[in-house]
Length: 483
Image (cartoon, rainbow, N blue to C red; front, side, top):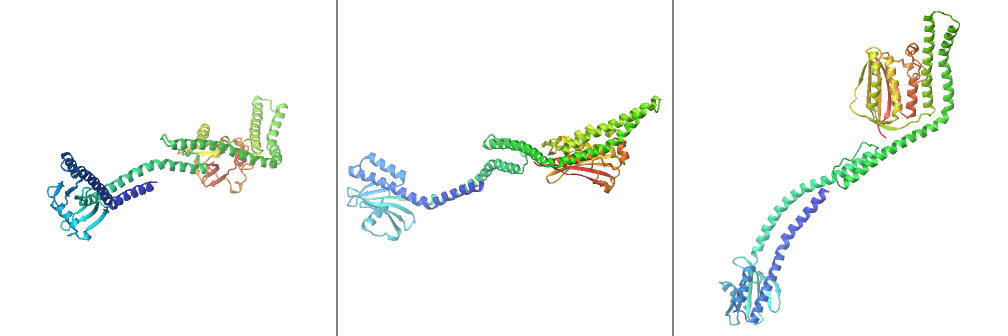
């Protein structure tokens, strides 16, 4: 835009300069001819009315002669001078005689401009001085010969000076105008470019982009409407993503539901067999008064209560897992701050970390916005952190990191301790599978937590996994960073 405006302005200035250089002099000569004709008409009128002796008329002629730089001479047929406006009229008289008698003037020095029955207007160059004049020679209506003369040499000097001045002024004007045009075009195009960038980012479903123009003009109104459209699109995509995931799960639900029920009943019966047997055995012992002392009875009751509590926790987890796998748990996709979620989970487990003397490392550099089901991602993270606490050994360190991938964010939870045997890595996601059954039994683990994690990640269509290190284990999961 700036180049176009500067080009147009430079073209106009150049055209004006060329017009001044090539057409100003002919235009000036044309105007001079008109001035001489007007002076002739005044002179001819005075001759017809016999005003050559009238002071007022002579004063008028002197004014014309002074104002328009026109020298006048009128003679009678006998050669006597009737009227003149210059003191030394002999040059004009010689010119008039030369014209009448057609002597001493070379045709090459004269350019005829206008010729009528009464007069002739010509452009003549003086042989000696090289000065140029516009002259009118002829006969007035009363028969008196006359000559009118005006110099034109000054106009050429004026045109030359004018062209130089105009060139300097034009260059300066172009330079200043370039700066002004560039400045104002930037003010005009910057909001357009910002709106273009905003629309590009919106096509990539990046709804963090917002128009920030402060000026109250049409661009601000357009930018505000685009901001509103961005918010509306974000809300609509959130609803569509939720509906899309729900539809996918509905299709898979009918295929998987029967197998899941069978598997659920089989696993429950297997896991409940041992605690039920313990509760039954200790309850029968109490009934038959195997140990009559109060301390033994209290021990029996505590075993029964402990096993019943573990069964209660396991049943709740099984119900949660079954609800997720069967599609009964709704998935609500929304945009939330993953950093804040991790900080909340760590805050809720701070007492447990302190009791186990565990050092937690989590470097948060600011908000990280992702798309997922916030409640279920919190459940996944809680299971990972709880699992890390119960298996943390050695340096007793838990480290949580976030890594930005191409379209996802990977969250990893590392705990120092013994690595998981390689042959066991794929089995830990199976319901009720326990790598170290004795240790799991010690803290009341049921082997369902990681199954819940896998079910949740499958329900939202994202990956999770585990990786061994020489000094510990790292569990990870991914969530969408783009809509």
